[in-house]
Image (tube, rainbow, N blue to C red; front, side, top):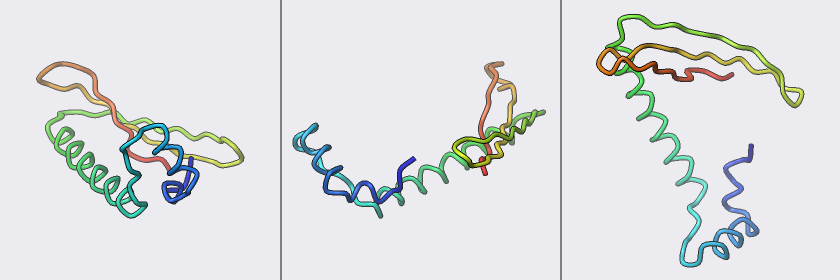
Length: 93
């Protein structure tokens, strides 16, 4: 539960470079860009998986933590090739 700018903190940089000599810390802009790219890829993959599912089940949940309220939604389906149960979180507001 940290802001992305933590990677620019001198103390964080020192922690990483001391613990992992020879490594460098990516910039906040790179971190955010990588996360957005991975999220878009995951979304497209999930859309593809759900397109091939004949039926799905959705669940919703509401909870409170640290004086904040959350609403979460998940989707569940059976992979018709492997017959394995699959689940994915589709929202958390």
